[in-house]
Image (cartoon, rainbow, N blue to C red):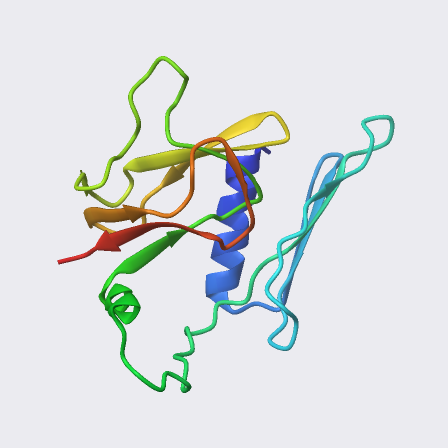
Length: 161
């Protein structure tokens, strides 16, 4: 099972509302736990290849985004609220291009569709193509090329209209 399949499994479990899922395929064991009171984290641990590989993943709990109740005054910075944020699904290094000699996946003003690759995140020597989950126009790139990103860190602002 590759990292992409594991990520898709985590997303599926998070959306299904299940609290725990255990999957065993040969020597590979995967346990995905979700909890409404737990902080949103994703943990992937791989045991040394001497023994049977063991992967444990805690999927983020899908919760509606809470709106802040504290904005005292409206500023131009709040103008970003009409945009959809594309966030990093994993921890790793953010790259805007598939390789140094290729053009960037997207630029400010680029039109994107659901499923279009918007960037690549390298995690543990694996390059994971990050696909858009929204259609629209790229308004802002929030991360510099070749910089580390955290799980759920905003990467792009997209105008869905």
